[in-house]
Length: 173
Image (tube, rainbow, N blue to C red):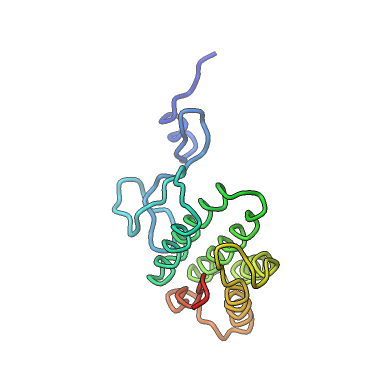
């Protein structure tokens, strides 16, 4: 039985795959995380699939990205921390990543999907309360996420470039 190379798998499926055939997406991205054609110049640096961040590094880098308007890339950083976190903290990081990707959906114009993810993420982070690990401002993140979701649902938030993720403050001031 012949085996298929990773490049042959990409040609067949249109997706990047590693040597075991596992799907990967190494295509360049725009600022909202949408894939661009192979060979084009991406608007953001990609977070490698195998990136590892400590909690402090992840919070700092994700906040820097949010402040710059890059919610999708912030989501990738938070997801990397989630994947390497100890079990008791995993849902906190998962929730933070969901809020960031919810903002991404709003930036891309998907208000319905954004509101769902924002609320789901808010519920996850809020459950950790005021004594959340690493000083995460769970009440502030949840309030930001629910407020944006409510504004999207009511038509008070203009989707797209007008969505500013800098209002999502991961740490209390």
